[in-house]
Length: 374
Image (cartoon, rainbow, N blue to C red; front, side, top):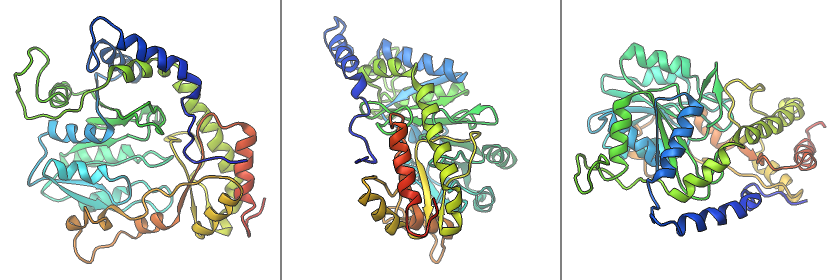
């Protein structure tokens, strides 16, 4: 049995739908391929699903973060607190608007940013905090909201990996003044290309983001640019395809959660042997990635490869250790929990079309790791 970490057949069952979508839009009289009626319907469907005032589809989750920061008028002289462990856009979006990322360490088990580290990083120059949900755990958003309110700063929720997650009854993307989603292929609501969305209840943020995604135009008249914007427009083919896929999202999320529940139960006995699963439960969970913490990660990775199980290492270095962001890291400062996460995390396959037999094979292979009981 060979089970790749990144499956090549994510959309195999919908190939006919995709081809029909391309043909229908490609042959339509209006020849509208970006920001058309299908994009508007897609945004409306997400608004209805989330109960949000506005959803703005854009070119990627990465640019969604940048558009939000621009809409909040965050720029040179401002600081934004971000996790030290995570994806590059967390820091890049801040740098790209001219602001300074300030890195906060993460929890050693959940790998989401620690509230007390965020609080310690806030200064008189802090304009926003930007927590990110990570792998299978949502950040402590109630505490983040309280911190933002107490210090009178903006709260941006990087929910790019967490679409479908719910914490204390509130969906991911709805905790901050604005949240973002990513629709890149492997995300929980991944699509056939790049794509993202901004979610907000603030009408001004929504209005400005809509202009920024389309070169600063407000949609009433072409070639009148109210702001210096970007090309971050959404594709009509992807909008139509995602409208089709939205109906099945809940079932795919449930399958991911079932797989995660099974893994976590099987792996609970491995903790004493240096292999730790993420926290059990469903509240505040978003099973985009299922990642173990393994003291002998490379040995475990080789062991699984020998049994045909593909794995993946996310983020081999903390953001402040990356060459691009090292200039923003204070000399002599360390983020020990982020560094530990980079050395120990190992992600397993969790895509929803894994069969029960395949899931059992993966779990058996992990439990057969030398020293780990079955």
